[in-house]
Image (cartoon, rainbow, N blue to C red; front, top):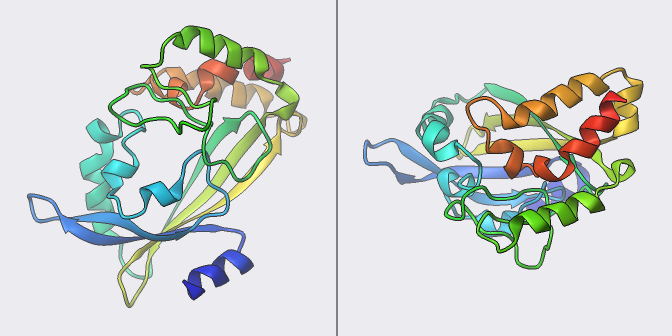
Length: 221
């Protein structure tokens, strides 16, 4: 715990530690989240995910179980000591809070995950009057409050324990800053693309059905 506290107090990056804690039928390792220090969660409770395997952690993500689950476990197992994997991720939030343990997602399948009951902005497809609630949330969207939320993510293996360290640094950008950089149309196109491709439910999952219209119009103006 002391080491995690030191990380949290001195490094403005979140850390998740994963270990091969179970085995698949084919003998390959299954990684579970076993420790963490997260000061800037993007719409989820890390505490609720601790101890769970990747498949359970990512269950609410559309297409993960069908398209990525087995390949991700194999990919994690192949990461060598001394190698680092880098990627980036983005989303739109309707507020400027770095710490957000709910309200950034909606669930396209009630079997894939449940909303945090105390957060009234998190909806799932099984809720009564879903369309009406989405329309209510759309009216509440204030473009000036919205942020482009970006994560710089890295993944590497520790040499002694062989644990995998998933680290991510979070940045928030106002939408007017995106426009000033001349990237408004680019982001608007990316937002429109959330509902297309092989996983169209991603637009629902990322709440694009709530903020997409207003944010897209602003970015293209």
